Length: 198
Image (cartoon, rainbow, N blue to C red; front, side, top):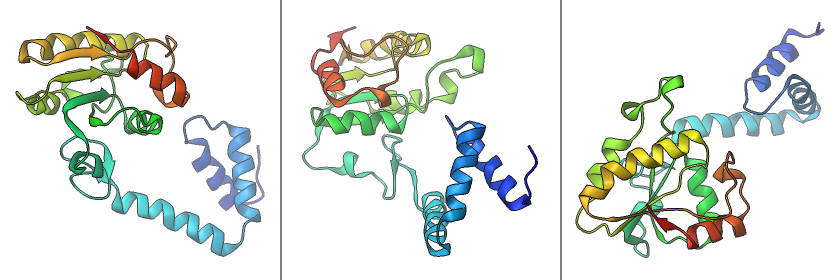
C-alpha cells in the first residue's frame, strides 16, 4: 500500500513490529497518533524512552524493576521460604493480581525450546539453583501449560528435588496451550491454591 507520507509509513511499520499487532491495527494506531496533540504524542514518546532508561532486571529474581533488588524481593512481608518460578515478568504481574501468593518469584526469561535454540544456558536456571538454600521450603513451578512449559517443569524438577525443597506446580484451571498472562484472576488463584507435588 502506498502512503502519501514517509513518516506515516514509518510509524505504521514500527507499530506492526509489536506482538499481536497486524497491518490494519498498526495503521489504525498510526492514524490515532496523528490525531493526537503534539503534547500527547511527546508524553507517549517520553514514556517509551523512560521505560528503556529506567527499567532493568532485579539481580535476585530477574523481574523487571526500577530499583535493585525489586520491591518484591526486598518486601519485609514476603514469605522468603517459597519461590514461584515463572517464565516472564508478565507472569509475575498475573500472579500478583490474584493477591493469593505472598512468596518470592524467579523469572526464567522464557522456557526450554530446543527447536528455537533455547536451552538451559539461555534461561536463568543457574541463578535459580543458587537461590535454593536450606531456608527455601517450597519451589512452585508456574510454567505455561504447553509443550515448552512442560519440558521446563520436568527439567527443573530433576534439578531442584535433590536440593531438598518441596517442588509443586500450579494445578487446575489453566488450559493446555494457554498463557498465564491471559488467565483471569480467579482461575489463576485457584491454580495456585490447588498446586500439586511434582
